[in-house]
Image (tube, rainbow, N blue to C red; front, side, top):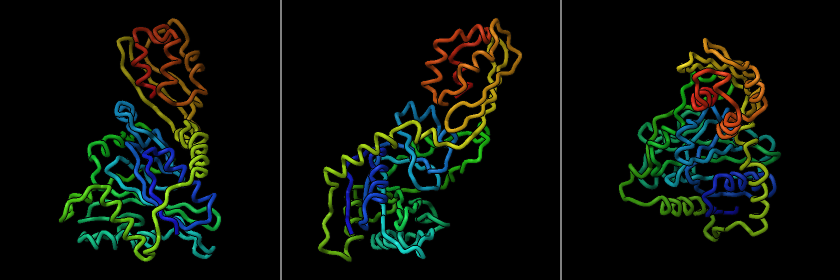
Length: 327
């Protein structure tokens, strides 16, 4: 088995590394890694429905999609993430988290922490969640990974994922907001997250005492960086993969109320109609036509609106009000 520590804190690179190691190697792997402030979206989720866009943008939080299912999670440097990748027989291709999480639970118990399994894929301490996990299969290989809350900032965790569900009507999986706690709050003897990283790595490889902790080779890094560039850092992967969803919102301006009804597919505006008791000197359907086909992304919509005479389509309404209505 290869034991890896990824020194980079880029979620795009780290998620690309997982896909590369799963699909382009034959090694059994245990890997530890950290991400800088980011929201990691499940493979089947609607990104826009899962994040608080205003908070994410103002706090410079990266949004990245992974190749496993499950719900959205917040990562920061108070998290420690782990990945198991193994070759399996076809008859072993089942979603069995306990098989991979038992060594993690045992390591926590050795620290005097009464860790327990919960539900299908969580680890709890004193009834509160400290780890969520997800899984993906590729041919005769399986990837199981999870994030462990060691000393994460609860305020960012809650606010970055705080979205009003009534704004969206879609078929995507909604994240489960569980009560959570940090591992560091339960330790009898304090340690840093990096000390915990070393401890956990040693626990996992104690059955193989001669094993060394490796780094990715220069060739592997180059391949991963290419995958990061072509897939994981792209809008198409992180937002464009979102399922179809609809938005129906209303704003009241000095010129009257404006209602926007929008259908979005593959992250792009597919249909858009405006209704309300506003006055106009130009037909708002012309403005809607300019927006249809664009990515449902704030910066792009804002740039388009800046080039349009919004006040002619909606008298006494501002571009800021219309932008807030649409995104």
